[in-house]
Image: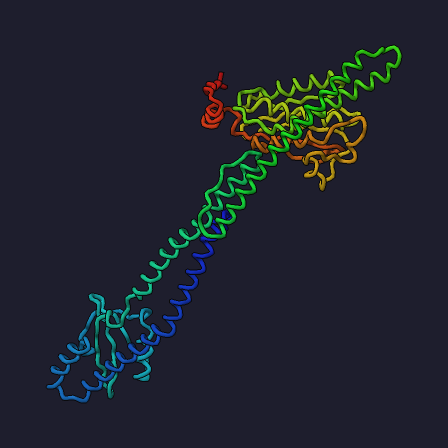
Amino acid sequence: MKLKPRSLFGRTAVTIALTLLLFMAISMGTVAYFIYIPLAHRHADDFAAVIVSAAHSLQSLPEEMHSELKQQLFNNHGLLVAEQTNGYAATPSEMSYSPFFHDAIERRVGQELQIIEAADGPLIWVDVPAHGKIFRLGFDRTRLGINPPVALIVVLVVGTLLTFVASLLLVRKVTKPLGRLAEAANTLARGQNPPPIPERGPDELASLERVFNRLSADLHTMSENRTVMIAGISHDLRTPLTRLAIAVEMLDEDTHPQIIAGIRRDLEAMNVLIGQFLQFTQGPRDDCPVQVDLWQVIDAIATDLRRGGGDLRLHRNDPPCVYFADPVALERVLANLMKNAVQHGGDEPADVSLFCSDKAVSIEICDRGPGIPADKVEAIFRPFHRLESARGATTGGSGLGLAIVKQIVTNQGWTITVDPRDGGGTVMRLGLPATSRFGLPAMSCQATESSRGQEPAAPIDTAA
């Protein structure tokens, strides 16, 4: 268990609090060492001198003056005088509460003294020798100042509370804007356009928020311009392609059948590429998730790929898996991953496995292709990036398939990992949050539907 806070707020607050508390402890220690302890020594030494002087005065004065002296000692110094043989019930005292007094009085007398505590009251008795006679002098234990230094305790407690409150207020002013900025950055990373962040607070934070707002607006503008440009180019290209397709259909297939078939394949490949461009520029959808059967989705995609010559083996490791997801986004992700596994898997069939439990939901697409180096895993999800092993004429593609997958996965809050497969090949693992295994928070669905002016769909009872 790690006690170190993970958040910036917690770490900064703890750092400031510990620093100030250490400063207070050093300050209190300094005051105690240079002021409190010397004063305690002096007070104990003065009181020890009074007691020893009282014992010597009692020894030197005649018996008839003892009564008046005892009264003066009690009135002026709070001392009681009794004969040693009076039989007061007492127990030996360790004097752990006032070592200064113990040392001071033994130093003045020059020998070890018996100091006892009264068993039936707050009195402390000291047997003091004076010229061969021992006098027992008593005083209230509060006379030695045995109470703890209340002032130091009050200062420490109040200072600790003030330090903690001040640390929280100070750090909160810094971390709250940073939290808003982090939330907006996460929204931007999911391909969405976050609302502008309020530009307030310290100058440094306000400047950072201002720069982020400008960056977000510029990225949104660039994305819109890119979408319009690519959509326009793709649309304009399809017009001549359509004319070419019509012209090819009008040719005599008996004259050059191979050339005509090749032109048709090229036209179909170009249409597929243009479709990928348009699909990528459209960005991720924000449809309300609905109940889907993951196994049926996988089986439908595999059936389509088998019609085109793809070789796949499906493995269902758990009972039917009902899940709440955007079906279009899920199909686009699985279709891209499974198609890649078929295209780059060589002569071996691709294996697709579904794992579904209350704690985790994942789909693994495994192939026996050349594999992906560990240092290239991040690169394969970049737009238009293709590994050298995937640039063959038979595989085709524009390098947008995995970029679209990454875009959708990030927007939906899913995860995708790429690992080497035992015996050669690659394992693509799509992880789905288990929280949507049996239901969906109603607020998320309602928010999506309300933004479209539609009524939210009634939840489906999965228990039936």
